[in-house]
Image (cartoon, rainbow, N blue to C red; front, top):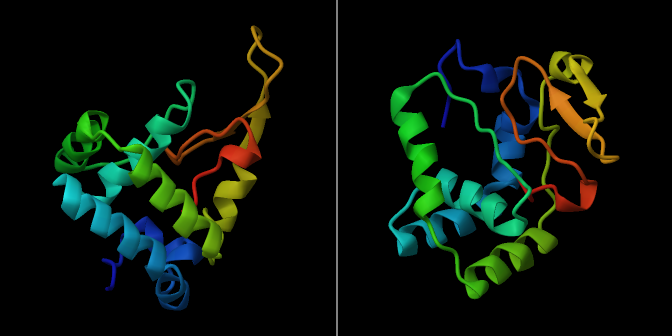
Length: 141
């Protein structure tokens, strides 16, 4: 798989060919569950985040209407306890290779503490990626 020259994933270390090969086992698992649920792997990943805790809000980024519609469809995907267990089990055995964001995106990151809580929130400007409040709740991808 290759990306168009303008695709931002070309700047993300996680998406270089070597890291994509190393991370394929997790992608394959999400694809298997997606086929069973008649969903896309992206919808399964978002549904997994939604199922984790009610206060986790994934914020996927896209510039394409079809991807926005796909992402919204994740709210209708119901993952069973077995599905969640399969994802957790597989993720615990896989070392995800490559940094999540390009180096310049990390420089754009900062922490914000909402006034009504003592929980710091990682905010990443210019990229719409999930916001995690605790490192132990980060997704396996």
